[in-house]
Length: 171
Image 1 (cartoon, one colour):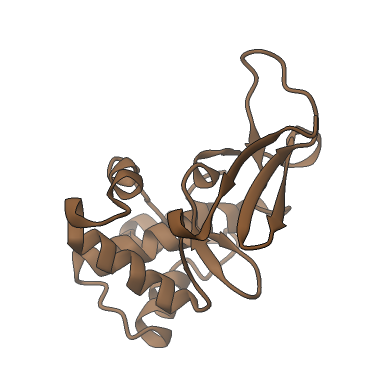
Image 2: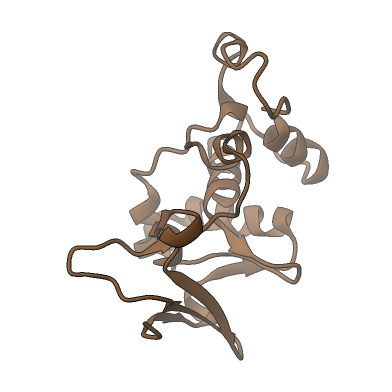
């Protein structure tokens, strides 16, 4: 309890004060590929399938009829209208999905943060970490002891399962 798990400096995170700007930065790094400073982080996400309902076809989304929330295409609409993003471009779409499903932040900025976004989600008493801002650095601390072989959990918020499914792709 109280042990710092990691500290992330601004240099290892991709951040922006605007979500559209963050998607643009991630897209630019995806385009650079192995030439990107962030390639070790970005390449680790290459195998991470982000299968949000917003990119499902109409038949697949029809299977969600009657479930909440009903705005299953929310992220596509946001990206196309607010960011003028091109969801038909593979780099645009991948960057948008990664930012929606894996970014973290607050009212001042949103970031793609290595290590942080690899923690599993839990709520209630299972959450065993807390975030801390130390100057420009982002830190993660344990809030309770974790037994050998135990998991480190983060919380994506105390939201209903429909929102978790829409925004992160899991229940």
